[in-house]
Image (cartoon, rainbow, N blue to C red; front, side, top):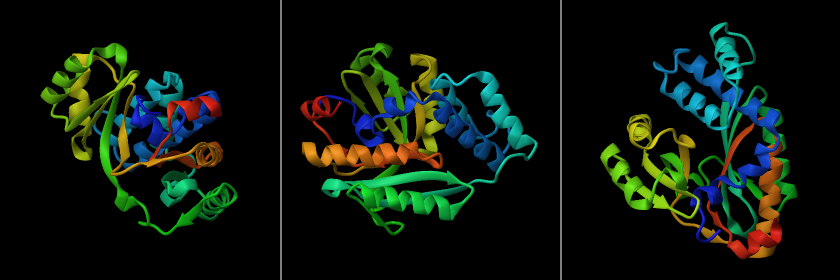
Length: 247
């Protein structure tokens, strides 16, 4: 996706998942409930919950759904979910990090391992690929938020570490611990962001040919369709020409 957002490369084609609104809302609700149970059920007092709620809002999740997820945590209802991270390699040697929330570790591990095995990948041990990524805060604004100079100035004033502007959007990167503070500052100058979340940013990326790209995207589609999988990150790059052929 040369000339396009690297975030879209490492996050995959979220538009495909966005079409399945109920499944997406279910995943967002799960994250909100887990975040609320991990601390105070008040977004103003719980940074993780605040991020979860902001991301739900950015995906147009109804306020009633958001509140129900928080209320479920407050009442100590619902399943207890465990956070698990899986690491492995996809076609073309692409490194992948799969983040999941599950109430059944064996089920999730089996599903993830099967997805890798059937789609040209290999599931590795914990830590096998994470060393090639940085855990950072990511804030994404649409191009309509302003030109590169305006967004760069706002990001610098907010204390961000890096900004990458593309045709469609601006990616603002910051230290993970600074994410909420930087996001709050940017909201005052640029408005509400499309995305505010902790991300895995690859140190190096891998360019894929059409064959490997097609197989990799099928693998990520299968992972995305699993209810337990929250996010799939990777270190791949796919050219515009290849993406058009695979669309």
